[in-house]
Image (tube, rainbow, N blue to C red; front, side, top):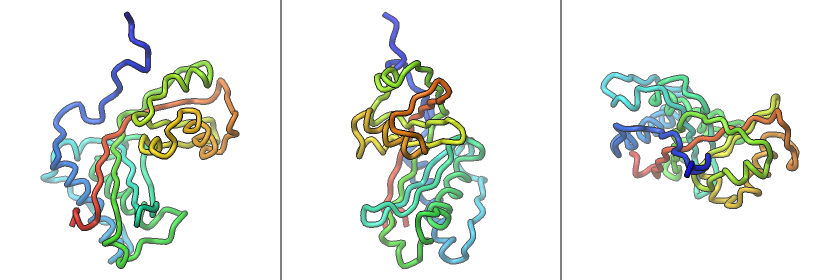
Length: 207
C-alpha cells in the first residue's frame, strides 16, 4: 500500500557522520559568542580549521536562550547559507544581543542562561488544498512549520508543540505570529515544514 505523505521518510538533518561531541562543540561555539559579546560588544570570528565536517557544512539553525525557564532571546536561520559553525555563533550572538524583544544579555546573567540549539533539515514544501488536509498531515512534536504569504511570514520550531500540542491550536497561533487572521486560508499561502536536531546545555555545563 502506498504510504501517505505524512508517513513518508522526512529529510534528515544529518544523514550520517553526526556524533555527540559535535553537539558539545556547537554549544561551546554558542557560549563563546555570548561571552565574547559581553566583553567586547561584537560578534567573534570563527575559525573552521580543525572543526568536524558536519560543522563546516552549510546548515541553518536557531539558538534559543532561557533564563530561569523564561525566554531570554531567540534568533535563527531558515535556510542554509553558511557553515553550521558560523550560523551557530552568529545566531547565539544575535539571540543574546540583537533580539529586539529583550535588552542585551549582561555578564552577570551568564550563569543562569540555558542554551538550546536547533539545527534544521532542508525546508520541505507541503502541497495541500485545504486547512483540514494540512492539519491531518502535521506531526506534533516532529514538524517545524513555516507559513509564507507575502508580506506575512512566520515559523514555529518543533519545540513549540510542547506548549501547543493540538494541531488546530498550533496552526492558529502560528497564523497569528505570521500576522494572518486565525481563520485565514488561501491558495496563495505557502506551507513549508522541517525537522530539527536539537541540543541543550545549561551555562555551567557548557563552560
